[in-house]
Image (cartoon, rainbow, N blue to C red; front, side, top):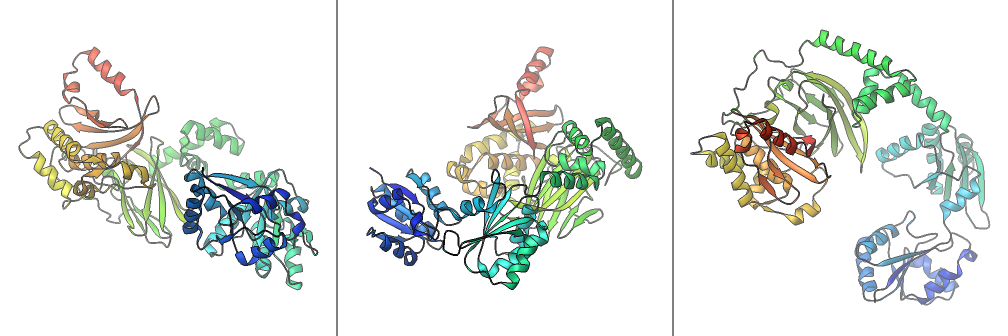
Length: 574
């Protein structure tokens, strides 16, 4: 029988706050894991607890966690205690709990003292809604990002702070949040406990003159709802109607819904927004004519011609912001080139085309240039760039737009890009040339590529289980290892077809039943676009009978093909 993990709350200052249940549990378990054994031994001695103790802290939390889990699997019961308060609140206990659940170990929490809740109830500030931030990060950039978030927080805010950093933190909070009401709690549950109800400005002045002693809990009032609404309205009023629309479209909102929301934000009828946007579009047509980078000729010269098209960034038309540049000189060819020279680990580039689909790409510092396709056809493209601050937090770097008139609709699906990445020296290109030799038609080439990839590449289940967010296929690695996930298969086949002059569109989406689906559509000179000719149904790849559309001469057969195609919902095109 497996043991169990007990999370035991201990006093935060007054030993009389120890609960009877925790006392009994600490005496009955086989082992106590303590954040600092030197502090905890005093507590155990006071209550005459003789249970063996081991250390579990920030610097050994992962290695020691697995040791403790192994002991629990062998039937031992373990109690986790922190220096003071409830384990898992602003300490490494949260990691042990998570790992226990992953390993199937039962966890129970024994309630008791907790500094943040004690301070909240003492503060005199609203308690129905609150957020807990623990200690602000030491890193300057991270710290500023959190302070920016707290500035718009409407819930009561709880922070921990050490006495020697209290004045600095109060000054920063005052600067970012304004002169909010605050309660500074010190020495909670002890003889000299204080709860100083004040404002951030007054608290800063007081503690500059009087050195604080003991760990502190800062409780702040959140921004009032009325203030938040007024501030939001002021922010919208600084934007043009077009910029306001772009804000919602970049979040993936449909045009119709975005127009409704803009009208609501501005307190005007929807027709007013429609008329304003219509005026902007007419102005763009007058200023830009037919669009950026348009060429005088248009056609299908590249189709059926075996060649590797090379994306270029000549710098003739470039959108720039701090550390980032987006070269749109060749947008008529169906792509833009993004470069990043900033200090962040990565940036998030969001491109919204006339189809209103938001495509999210990442450019990392280690690979600072990337080619992104323009798959939404002709029209206005919105461009938003965000710089990674920490974790999943981003700050806006660029908000822009550009007009596109494609030389032809096939080019985005002939050029390489970040997802279908190849060049003339790629092994995939050489293999495609080898496979195409002796083939009479584009259909023959397509079938040769399909059968080679599906027969020589095996599905990598381990990789599929551990694939990271933002994963990018490496087509030559897939060829070399002979393994890959569905994305690798699709990128490899698309690259091999494109370098043979066959436009290959990588579609990703779902069936009407909500099942994940991926497929490749190609353009054939004699037939036009053949949708879903190669598809992945979540289990395996399939090749549609290439003669199906060619043979569909009767209206009944064409209706059946349209019916089959309607089962698929495209989410992204690469």
